[in-house]
Image (cartoon, rainbow, N blue to C red):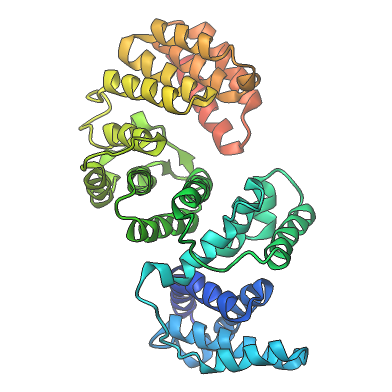
Length: 406
């Protein structure tokens, strides 16, 4: 098999999984009630594709091939299990499903059923996020463990307990109706955490999946301000993805090539924000901040006073030390580096920011803008020692090298 043909198979499989994996998994969970089986048979279908497509050619509809293969595998596993009649009945249900089964309404979308089940309030928040990352987004248990700073084995047990609780507590596999409004906030929080995990680690598939879920939620609740705002926020941030890294190195917002920003996503995000707000919540304010950056013609023309005002509003709605830290940086850009340093020192009094590398990094940046290069280098060296990833460490080292050469 030629290298070009192998690449074609890999691309076709990746595209089909990105498009249909969640729908297939969710449909099989609804049908069988077996979470592990659903995930396993989809993974098995992908492995079979890698074996058969190079030989037989990529099918005309790769997603349909994966769907049919996963369903056939599920039927085979259930038959072999030869357990109680309920399982045999599930086999019959799967066999009766047509490959083009769809429910056009958002309430009937298996993906939404799955995400509301994963985000049920009976589960701890950490379990909700982990389960959504594992089942909804397909992240490996090992990768989720890294995100939670725990071992793969520990995370595996946590996921197993969450799935068992869903089964034993009788948590329904549906989009809620009676308490929908109360449940939406929890779902939005999890969807945004999935997005930020993908955005922070450049895991494009996670960010894309979160945006797809955001679109579904907007379809379900078109008049929900915060649902629209979350989708706008994700689109506006995601629009910058191709400019955030160059040759594997992270590029700060100020130095990004704005011609590489995706204008269609910026326009869509801005359009979502152009409506009368009934309730203005934290996603709405954050989306406005992202829009102020995304619509500025250049870094120098950014409306920093407006951004400071938005951070003030956000601190009133949802106070947090990280928001105060971001506000200090904005103050430095709006009112001068010394004013920013004063705001930063005030924010850094919060004990939750103790030892956080971003405080030292922000201090180094503001000191350099104030022309205090020796003090800036000391702060940057501290930030380098505290940086949690190699990529962030290299970015700070590059900034320190630029200061030494200035």
